[in-house]
Image (cartoon, rainbow, N blue to C red; front, side, top):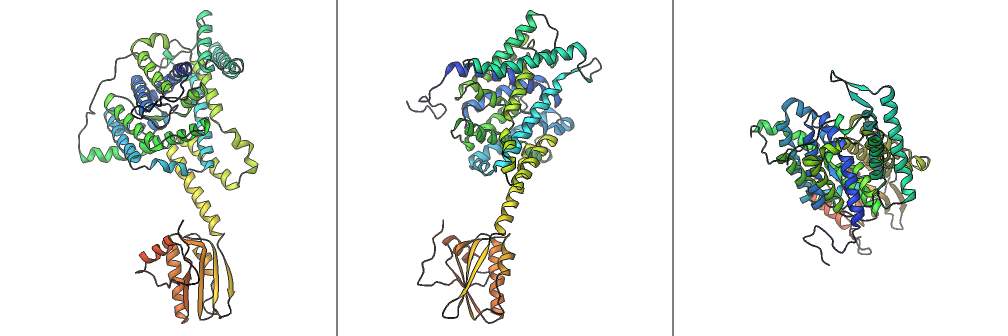
Length: 512
């Protein structure tokens, strides 16, 4: 059967049981995270839940990757905390709308594909850092708010009870799949621990201890703030950072799911969906967000491979907001903590530890740097950007060392330089050192059949070399340039003095 308006592939086999159960499990794990980060940012808990509902629903319908889960992620709200504290929640909503517009622009311009250029060590560092953040966030749940509003560690029986229930949860999540994978282990763990607490009337920390989550349907709301140049100056940098953080985490999550499921998502479509979802958040009172790595892993591990589970998770959260709050508020936090701890263990790329003695030292350095920035600054965009820059510089340095020249003089007394390796900003100095204009014969030919002129630094180097030979009244020819290299030199002919040698014996190498 053909696709229907490009949203669902009805030819795809959908396991409705897996999708239903995965959706319920994801909803259970999204609630505490959305609540925690909303409270951390000084927002109403409902603003966090609205974000989970809106992000989840819109991206499940329109996103570029079935099986991915989006919600009110901490990665995006963390960068907006300063704005919320200084200007208030209305500026938050306006910023989220602008960030959504930026994200749609990235998708429309098809820039989402550039996430494929992120090196594997950066991916390892990103995921390992994120795994540590997820785990440490669960440790915070072993605290409880005292009467004076401060957060203190649980003590005595309360602490031991919490630890015991977390261990039970972890054991169920680990061992239950060995018995059967028919029902998601995370969902079984949540309900078993819930039942233990109810049956034995155990007094332990519950969702209600974080916040009460009942409310109404989200309502359309235009942010109440001055529509002025000054307002744009305030929200623009925050929107830019949020859109970048959101897209990087979302598209890295997309790549991760691609690898797990051995299929390919659409990065540009996902960028547009993320933007539409954030615009909806801004107008309907959500705190915005992006793809959630932990919840996506819960979803994939529960057997979801279609869009249905994300839709069910979003609708489940809305139902909980409207009518199910009294039930959900009684779920022990220990059950959710145990599930998320297992997710963090699954998120960590243990293979990066196993192969560390086989990896280049530069890759190890990049991975550790990205992980540390992610852990300590909670700035995923900055971590990935720095990782990519370091990787690019290392690549440039390695290629700069690889340029070499084979030199010989033919029977006509013409000296030839056969160049191997790319000529670019990193290799120009090594390139220039290989020539001897003073001692070379009257005519010199540089053969680029095994090389490539890459950038303006390379063109400038050729110009400098040509002038050195001209000063000695000698002629320099360039041979076997590819079409794109010749085009680059022709475009820069007003700036340089080079002689492209067309030898009829040889054809000019065509561009790649």
